[in-house]
Image (cartoon, rainbow, N blue to C red; front, top):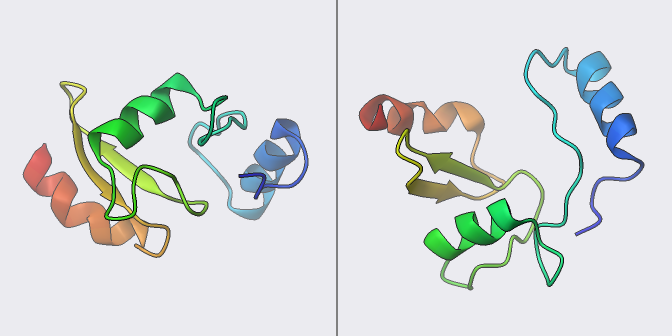
Length: 91
């Protein structure tokens, strides 16, 4: 996707300084194509969209249950806090 400029270290520093990230910031990985990370291949295969499995934009979110099952997929425009209802009913 190449939407995040710079290195993984740059992205981590940005998240920590700009957003005061108190969560894990993972390194950059491919999410589409032949070099897609296995975890993204799994997530996308379990919750394709109307347009297929491809992740179209940054901040696509997946909700995964304690059992490892993919519960839902949310587009980049869905605010994270709006997923709270799904979290409450899933856990």
